[in-house]
Amino acid sequence: MNADDLERNELIRMGGDTIEFLGRRLMILSQHALEHLINDLSAECDSKTTERLVFRFAYFWGYADASALRRSFSWESTNDFLRAGCRLMEIAGIASTSIPVLSIHEETNTIDIQLEWRGRKADGFGASETEPSDDLIDRIVSAYMSGFASFGFDREILFVPDNALGSAESRKASGKSIESWGDGQVTIYETDDIRERISKLAGGLKEEIEDRRRRRAEAAVMSTEMKPYFMEFRSRQLQSVLYMADRVARFNTSVLITGESGVGKEVLSLYIHKKSPREKAPFVTVNCSALPETLLESELFGHKAGSFTGAVKDRIGLFENAANGTIFLDEIGDITPATQLKLLRVLQEKEIVRVGENTPRKVDVRIIAATNKDLDTAITEGTFRDDLLYRLRVVEIEIPPLRERREDILPLARFITRRLAQKMEIDNLLLASQCIDYLNRYSWPGNVRELENAIERAAVFCENGTIRPEDLPSHVTRGTTLPDQSSDASAKSLSDIERAHIIEVLDANNWNKSRTAAILAVSPSTLWRKMREYDIRK
Image (cartoon, rainbow, N blue to C red):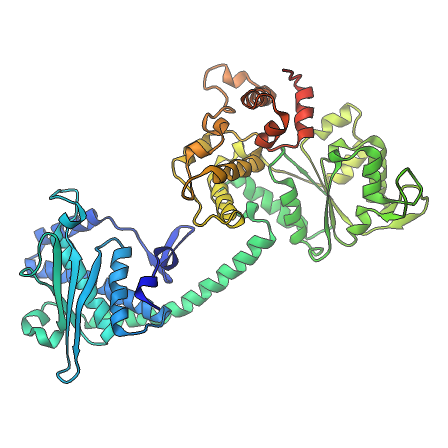
């Protein structure tokens, strides 16, 4: 490893609620808070005690960093290893440091090192109470490199600021083996206990790092297999959804998943399949609203050659394709009464009949259905069979809309951003903190699907890999779907709000229905259906 090859984003790992440097947990410390602490120490202790404590703090820091670098990388030379210490100080924001002089005299067993860094004026800072003092930086740099070099040479090296050579622009320190400094310096800087403590810490850290790597690998496999939309949540509502999914997954019970468009019904059905004994068998998805009745029956149950125009050969259906696995019937509320009757036969008799045949065929398939409709109302209206609903709804899992679990919006947005970074090959794609309020305020009628589309749109238009509010769709930053905060807002129904939102997005896109459907994260057929339902006309 070469010192110049050290990169901040490779050394420092940020994830969850921790920050790590090569396996060790880090905390971000304000330099002004540190200076305040040192000032308090000076007020409470004599000057030599304060100097000793500050030195030990930074020495421990440098010695521990050196131990981590030596454990993690191979180094070409001691000189390059010392320059790595300078690079770490630059990465940590302490100072931009260099080593202009390094002399090792083997015959006299002495070491002479000159350390140089930039003062505040060289960095464009004046004398200001809001900036760290040169004195503080001098003490931290000298003590840090004392610890780092002591580990590197496996002997005590002490750096002392050289006030005679330093200036406001260029600060310097001289480093020597501790024997070369004399007893006056040695009595102040006692470090034997520090070296012993770090040695013990390093021994236990290796085992801990391996354990973390194993757990992260297991989590990565789980995350990939389970479509991690349902791994990124904070709400109790979704925790309850996952609890029910985990319980029912072990059995062959039929499941009905309900919820608005875009909440993740298909994702949850796949989650249940992956957690079930059928996980290695096929998982087949059917969108029941996307096909006309005759074609849907052929797709589901298969057909015999000649049974209808275009049926030139026998074809097996999706139920047979899903043998021993799971079939997911999305938009189940849209199937016709005739198809409902045939589906009821599958649930009751565990067999299907191909279109154009009379011979039943046994199938072993688990059925998971989903809908965004109120099927109880559909039964009352005579458009859905009650006996079919009872067999589909052995267990019903309702996924609440995103606006009812706003605490899930941010973790979902961050996960989507990370996934898009890989998909779109955008290095270090970030979601600027200024976006958070906009994302949390918007009511997301298209739910998770709309959130993903909005962030993907923002990723396309963002500059320098950072998504800012101006990159988000305008209706998100305007918060158009939020109900008014006036006294009349509570009187509005959800359908009123949805109708108003559809009209506003249509207006914003000059009534281009394809573009509007994409922004709303629904299919064009769903948009047409909503427009008919709400009597929306230009």
